[in-house]
Length: 96
View 1 (cartoon, helix red, strand yellow):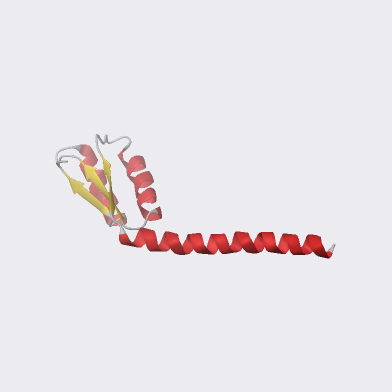
View 2 (cartoon, one colour; view 1 turned 30 degrees about the vertical axis):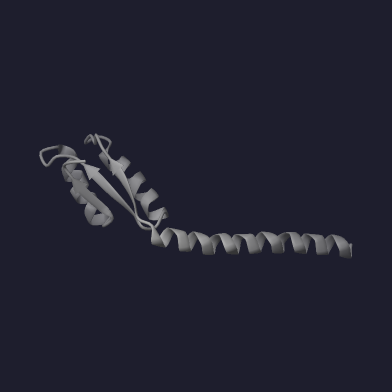
């Protein structure tokens, strides 16, 4: 019984060390690099859902920016402007 307890202890200790090292490397990697996620062809019906899901992805990957491409006369532009107040990582552009 003692040997079985030691094997289980070592197993979970290895998993804990691996999780700790992974979290440190993940923190170091995501803090240095900036990436850009581009959303194009926004329609007024699906703009909010697409922007929210893309913003969630950008928040998960630290240092990532979100660019919405739409013209100022497009109805989706107003939605992008409102979402930009909620998510400061959003940039609105009319050109690629």
